[in-house]
Image (tube, rainbow, N blue to C red; front, side):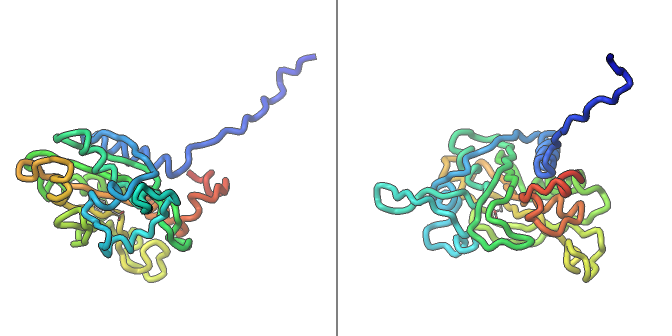
Length: 255
Ligand code: TYR
């Protein structure tokens, strides 16, 4: 007979990966601020990843971006194809095809040839942002990024702007948010500094604009690039970046 009191069989259901959740959350915040969301290629060329971003062949900034080159020489016998080391090449690709006003965010994977440890992995995720229009100033950069931090982390965190250097911006800044521990030595998230760096940013260098044919006398812009893994690490106190890529369901189930 049919026993209608038998419980149903449970279906194993998946869930959304914490990094996908954070990507969606970040892009949703920027959408409400008027940004469009798009993606770009992970296989890039030297021109878009470096040259057009004001990082010429012998520039020391290349050393900070240990590159995975693809073993396929161009007509000149030189290696030209690589796995993008940051999402910034999408600034160039977008500006090649679109003229101001520009307001975009670009999430995606990036690759660096580095030894693996609790805070470094050879593939990680960034979100790039770019705004170009008439009259864009550092005040727009600050206001936009402060508002992002407020919405993502809540109103109780402090936000710190400090000078930093990136060849494709001038001036350049680094943004950090205060750690919830208040700066305890034994904190596994900030290691006692009380601050967590989440992104690099700055006013787009006039040379970057000119190279894509945008008049840098008429238009100015700001850009930023944030490390996406850092956001949930800071928010939840996750102390090992490798957890995001090891597919341990005991970890993933918690989000
Ligand atoms: N691309 C930089 C990096 O990966 C981050 C960055 C992005 C800095 C945009 C400034 C900027 O305008 O380190």
